[in-house]
Amino acid sequence: MQNVPFWLDYDYEPRPALDGQIEADVCVIGAGVSGLSCARELALRGADVALLEARTVASGASGRNGGFLLAGGAPFHLDAIERWGHEPARRLYARTVEVQPEVAELGGEFVRTIGSLRLAASEEEAAHVRRHVEALRADGFAGELVERESLEPVLQGIGYAGCLVDHDAALQPARWIRRLAEHAESAGARIYENTRGEPGKPVRARHTVIAGDAASAALVPAVKSRRLHMVATAPLRERVVSNLIYARYGFEYFQQTVDGRIALGGFSDLDGPLSYTGAEEGNPEVWARLERYVHEDLGLAEAEITHRWVGIVGFSDDQRPFAGQVEEGLYALGGYSGHGNLIGFIAGRAVAELIATGASSDLGVLAL
Image 1 (tube, helix red, strand yellow):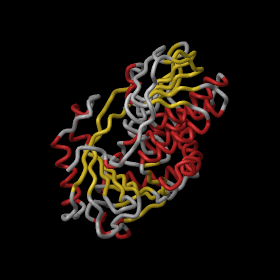
Image 2: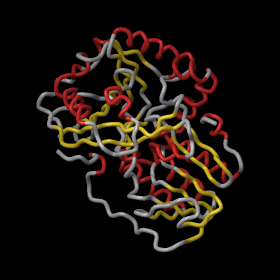
Image 3: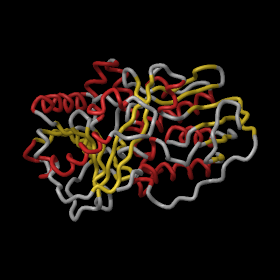
Image 4: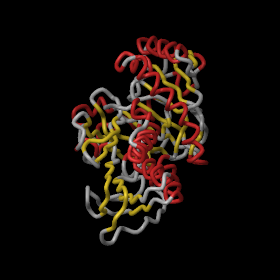
């Protein structure tokens, strides 16, 4: 077993580190989805952009997550309506649906539009799933109710009903982010790996963007760092799930990769208060429960666990993402609450538009 992310377990040649000090219009710190989206958009608008990454592109949460490209925010649509109000929730969901095809096109073969299935793990949750479907359809969004008898066999032992959203997509997140880095460079951005940055060092710039999901906690009090656990299996002999699976109110989530592996995350509630940390160290109890979930709950007794890892993400108090200016010339993005693959892309571009033009319509769907 390897304590490294499966998504990052392949040969990769990093870009050179920055040697000395340089000047740029904008310095972006963090080569995850939001930082790369921001850098690409700024470069497309003609800005001189330098992006610094302390490790390698996709080494943080962007290369360690479940690989879900889901529409909407962290709360389910009906919960977002109750928490944020109908119009803010509807606008955020609509914007994510609109941007999904663009992200899929940029990701190429590393994005598969296979749909997501939000899976109820109890009769009580099944009632919530039915209301979820109704809320999506009432606002004109895709959502299909799947009853228990229509679930795939491996899901019938853990699921009572599901909400299928057919336009959601699966990612190989590390390779998709590294593809996005290539797009940013093609637009003109300069990327330096293994280079730590802070406002004014080692890049002198009028604008600095802190684009690490959890790193935004240092600037935005409503955001807290949290670890999420994942495991991956060896390739299975057969395909057992067709969609992304988002089970038990989203506490468990998994997909079957192109080569047949199960990549599974979850049980942050079991980790409890210990999960609020910035250290990339796992809880053995959570990893053991994830293994039991594969072998017992899913009934895949012969599946060999080959990888296990954690990712550090930013959770906001009300699960609403943040993007904006925190002081003159300094911007922060984060608090995606485990849903950064799509919202981070939108947030990064919104901050780029703010810097370039003084405004962005997308900032209206993000937290103030």
